[in-house]
Image 1 (spheres, rainbow, N blue to C red):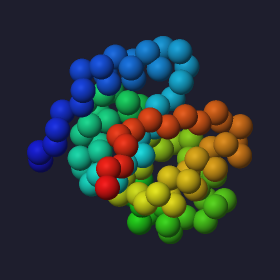
Image 2: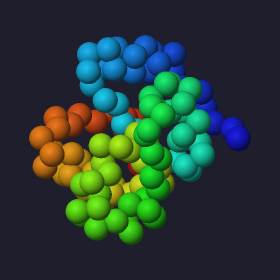
Image 3: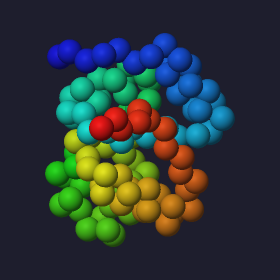
Length: 106
């Protein structure tokens, strides 16, 4: 599997977030295996964290998503609509959500 390695500052940022009690979650369009490998390299995942694909996400009702959203550390192969749905569910549960990422260049 080939992927660009995470930037050096990413690992430090993830560690600082975790130390501050912030739970980082990856939401990406990347393939599931790629996303999981990057998340593992960044030490983002706990043993109980799940990796969920956009296809699996679409199969979940809103109630089902609400019951698993706190257990998912990586969402892979998701659409912009999926991202919005994830953010909305987290916010409904009282979470403060911030997003970072690479800008879309067209």
